[in-house]
Each structure stands twice: as C-alpha cells, then as structure tokens.
Length: 515
Image (cartoon, rainbow, N blue to C red; front, side, top):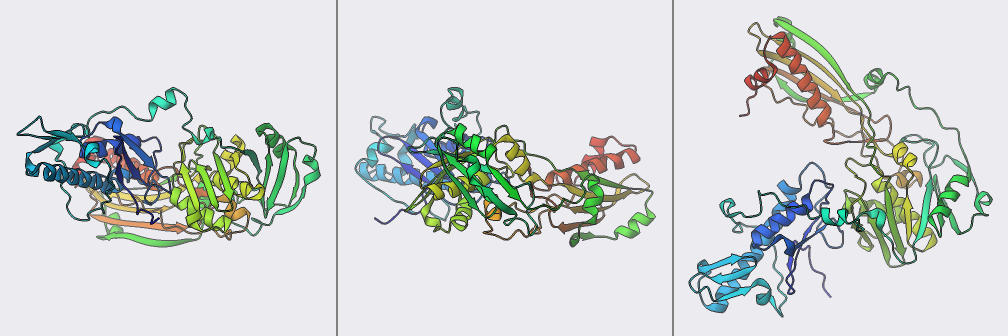
C-alpha cells in the first residue's frame, strides 16, 4: 500500500474531523486554538475536531515547538488545508445539485441551498463511500474573512482540561503497556558536565553481585558511562538503583563559579558585530551625561513540577517511545543515532509531561528507556528521581551584559554600546554523551544575540555578541537569550530616564520609533 503524504486535515465519514500539527501543546493551549482554526474554516462545531500533535507517524514534521511559532507559522498550512477541504465540498454539493457555489451556505458542517433551504446535506453524507485525497494547494486558497468568524478570536473552553480534572491518563507518566518492566538509571558523579575526556569513559567497574539478591531484578545494563537497572516492579528497580555498587574515576572539579561575573568575563570569545551606527566613542566623549553598567544573569533550574518519565518498546521491527519531548521529530533523529536504527523505524508518541520548555530531562529519559528496552527486549518505563532531574537537566544559561550609554544636553538618548555573552549549547541528549555515541566537545552556538538590539532610538549605536562555549551543560530557560538582553535594555533606560529627570514610561514612548 502506498503511504499517504503528510496529512493536515482529514474528514471521516462518521462525522469526525482529525487535524494534524507537528508541534505539541506545552500548556499554551495550542490544542484548543488549532482546533478553533480548523473548525472555523470548515464551519463545524469544535466538538467535531480532534487535534493530533507531535506524533511522528501521523503529524507532519514542522520542527521543534519553539519561539511561539505554532500559530503564526505552522498553523498556516492547517488553516489552508481546512479551507481547501471546505471549498472542495462546496463544489461537490454544487455539482450534485446543478447550482452555482455562490448559492450555498454552510453552518455546523451542513451545506444548504440559500434559495431552496429545504435542500441540505452534511459534509459527511457527501463523503460517504468515497476516499478523496487532495494535495495542499500552495496558491491562494479562499480563506474565511475575519468578519465572519464565530470561533477564532473568541474565548473557548480548553479541550485538555476535562480529562485532567477527571484524573484520566493524559500524561506520559500514566503510560502502561503490556509486558512493561521498570527501569532506573544510575548517573555518574559529574552532574551537568558536557565536556571533558572523562565523559563516556569514567566508569571503572560495576559490582553486579551487589544487587543479585533483589527479587524481580531483570538486568543491569552498562554501556560506557550509562548504567541502568531493570526490574519487574518499580520499587525493585528503585532499590537496585540505590544498592548497585560502582567505582568511578576521580572527576576534575568544575571551575570556580562563586564569582560568576569574573568567570563569564574570562571565557574565550569570538566577537560578532551586530550593529554599527554613527560614532559611539565620539558621542560618549561629548555627551552631557554618561553611565556604564554590568548586568549578570544567573544560571537557573527549570525545576519542573515532576521528574521526567518515558516508556520505550524496542522490537526487531523498530522502536516506539512515549515521550514528553517538545521536539518529537528531532528526538527521533537522536534515537536513530543512539540505537543505530533507521529513523523510519522509530515512532515517537508525544504525551503531556511535567513541562519541557527549554529542555529539562524530557529527552534524556526517552533515550534511557530506549537503551534499557533494547537490552532486555521488553517495554521499559523509566522514571527519574527528583535529584537526577534537577542535577542533570540542562540549566538555563547564565549571561553577561556590559552596557554604556549617554544622553545629550536636552536629555535625549544619544549613545548606546551593548555587549552580551551567553555560554550555552544545545545540551545534547545525555545518553549520546554517556555511551560515547557523540564526542563531549562543547559547541559554541551563535544564540546570544536575540533582542540584543534595543527597541529604542539611539543615534549612535554599537551592538556586539561575544560567542562563548558553555561552562556547564546549559540550554535555555525561555526565549533563549532574549530575556536577559531585554532586562538589560529596560533597566538601563530606567537609569537614563533618571539622569534626564523624565518619567520612565514617557521617556520610553518618546524614544520608540515603532508606533
């Protein structure tokens, strides 16, 4: 059977509408808002629409769920697909009745002849006994004008809330599959590291006899620095995790972090010039008043409300994982590399979790479960401990911002120099590092420049980003480097407003060029 291409909208003869999006709902409510968009274009009730999000076998690959881009970018083909389906159904009804499409009206999935209201049919009656596959039209599909909206732009009840109120199994932690075992991992004594020759080969020995007495123990799995235990019951796996005796190499200490500003300044950097406007040095030299400030943004934990969890089922014909990742299709690539398995044989079923914005351990625990399931040949559920979650999650990166600026004699903004450095990488999946599948070489990412350019009109402007390698395993918390940079801009203009003896809000508005 020839597989279908990516599907965005499917109307089923029994009266249901399925809609597919590659992004996932991280608590922002896109499962509801995307359903609103589809229901609006099709003119059906919201109850008819079921959203399938992030499932690699069903939803299109639209990249990771980041940058608040779901509605503004990845919802566009979904909206067009719904509109195209509507137009096709209208054309079918018009042909059946021998009348122009312009005479037809739609309400709640029913098409009616405006001139003869007794003549009416539903989408699903039209589709009965047929299978119609439409290719998404890249051109201008007629979209419903906003003036006719009845759903979009109006408050709608969140579709995910009822199941949560009733404590139905909607989280990845709730997944249970036949024959499932329970796994736990034993992490090395170097939490948070992603660099150094010791990663992947710091384990000296494992005393398997130290847990041989535990009932229900199925296996102790060792691959490089990755260590896990599998048991029939969860409490047995927990006990084995605690009692397993291991010897590790001595781990070199981290650089001193008690003076974070100095540590950040010392990092070797490659400077990127982002903006050069006017003559900053000359303007600073002739300014009526000038100040210099340094802002330090600390490392932060995501501190998810619950530790991460995943279930994996490794079989001869492929791998299925149940995951709380925000990057299902990227997760599939990492699992392919980890397990040396063709990407097409890996299915990622995305369920809700205890948060995952900016990468907590949601991806790491999926890889843990996959390795353990492959080792024992049965489905394995892995639950991290809270200590493992918080010690090993990629920390929200620290950031250093050095700012100098000036105002003229009239109190107007004159000059602004801004340098930012952001020691982060993409915090690769932990099992890839611990097993030695990838080298522990910290990558320098050019990501510290988000919102580095201020929104205010400084005649003389110089903006630089110093790209640096990470100190510890660090990702992003929210907005990558945007929050610290914006914080620095806003606190600094507060100080300039004080120098100019102006109200802080009025001063901002006077220097915002964007209406």
